[in-house]
Amino acid sequence: MRGPVNVARSGSGDLNLDTIGRVEIGSVGSGDISVSDASGDVAIESIGSGDVSVDGVNGNFHVGSRGSGSIEHRNVRGTVSVPRDND
Image (tube, rainbow, N blue to C red; front, side, top):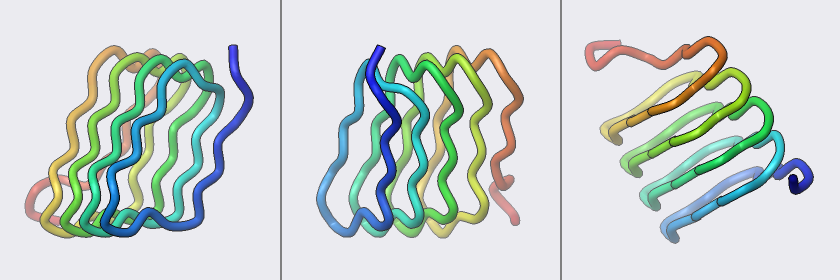
């Protein structure tokens, strides 16, 4: 297992994280985020127009707020807390 990942901001580029520990991301702009096989929690403060895909989280998955970007999640062992489409 790998260590934790902390990203303050992801702008317009894509970010792919695979086989890692806990993930904390401040904000996602227009770039896409992909997380797979995280051994801990995955938390994202805010998402703009970028898309987020999470598959294989051994902890909780949390997104604070979202713009027009989509959120997909699969195989999360803990709780999932994401804004609904009309939030």
